[in-house]
Image (cartoon, rainbow, N blue to C red; front, side, top):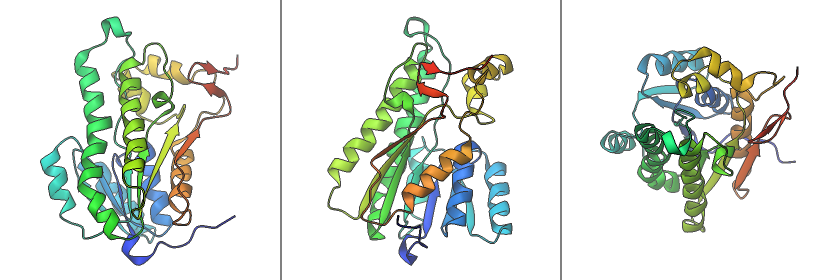
Length: 259
């Protein structure tokens, strides 16, 4: 098996969106440890600045850049800071609500689509020329198993993640032959500090029930490890789609719960 090597000089910058917590923060730490200079983006300036300081204190390179991925003008301005980049990890996203289609909040649906799909589109469009200029670029789309199959009460999030999945799949077709890989990582049940809490508007009880009885859901580090592995494959190897679930989860609707 090929082992990870230090990225070549033109490809050493890795941009991670949604880096203020969870999978984004864990991915930033692991890519930094793999030799990348990580650029941390998120709306919460204090969070990404603290993470950049932590990464720097560990002897790696990190820069914090506050950014709302849905603000195209701000994204375009952000892109001017780079001549080339090696990796773009489109991680910013999230779920809101768990209502059926009949009563779902259109504002929640709109916000999820804007962040998950349009945010990924904005960063990818703005940075694709920089990725190509590196001669060895990688676009990572952190989607979800929700983008591959449906489940009751999740239609708004499922629709947004299906959009991200199709964006990645289509981009790969459109840029084949150019020196940019398109990797999609689709996690299943991941327990982070904020995902379920955000989905249920801070309701601790509802958030806890998502993971109730599941002995070992995925962690942010598990997913970050998967992303870093895919990114650090040899340049000719493209991990088109990697689905990662905890052993206790057979599908979006089939989960083993103890007790």
